[in-house]
Image 1 (cartoon, rainbow, N blue to C red):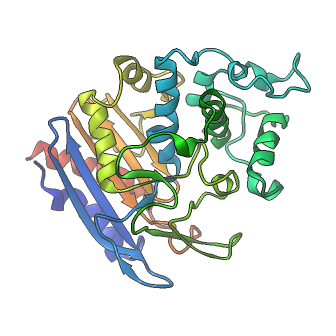
Image 2 (tube, one colour):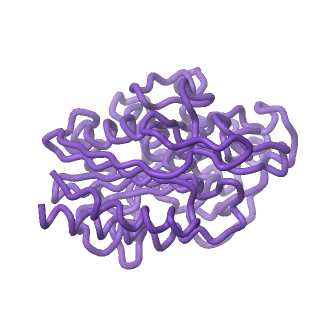
Length: 336
């Protein structure tokens, strides 16, 4: 299918240089063929551990597309929500003490999916308490500071609450395919950071502080996955078995600048590299994960690393490694 040595070369070089502990690269084609390459360490401290194909990664913000976006679009398919209706369709108590004037009440579900809101990129929600329900109330009643549209975790925290309200259940109750799970995962886990807040190296425990404080499963983070689970999800997008035509249209069609519903579409300088087709979507995660789907070529790839282990405060080179890997994957496919 593909010269995986060539495609994996950028990641192998990053491991050899000590920039990342380990990496897994998986590639899948629309016809179901797939290949996986693994190298390096799942953990360096406190107990060193070799990385294997069976290890579970904290997917971080890749949760936004594999889980939250998919759940929202399924609910829209079922007619249970309207993507262009205000969030108050599902959350009538949003900013309930300023019903007439609160701008948050005018935001739509699609606005949040495409990050076309005034909400901030992130907020240290975990510093406001340790009761998940109280923190949800804080998110809903806070008068958020305004700014230009940016990629915002808060958008997806709100979308997670939409799902919980519409379904009457926690996000972690949503049925997930094998190889995908809200933590702790049912198998060996890759270590992430030594968390100063929690005072320990995290392993099989959600890295994102806000997701942890919100109960470990939130709209913006909390999902764990194996390389097989991520590739199975991508294959379902490529062959249409995992998404309806309406869902595929929503994730492939730009809505705001280079953003679709949940995903990024190829743009100059993006994480997926320059060699992929214009019909490519992708998303990355802070822990060092990423998934890209090239519909024109009928191929998808995931690069899963533990670049924050044992600390985020180190130049892992991940922002160079991702596009280099994407270009290497496409080059290897062209020459296959």
